[in-house]
Image (cartoon, rainbow, N blue to C red; front, side):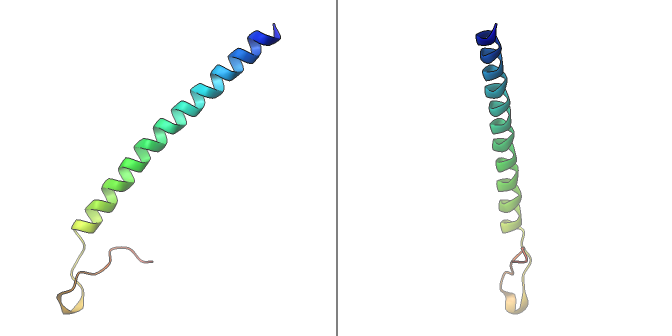
Length: 56
């Protein structure tokens, strides 16, 4: 009975980790797209130079 519970617990942990990694990949792709859009659509600053679209 204990080995069965350990196998089920391991399967649950691996499933959770796989789901979390999949979600992190999608979040990384979304952040990359937002960064690229901000890089392309940044506004011009003083003197015609392109300004930074972020604040740090």
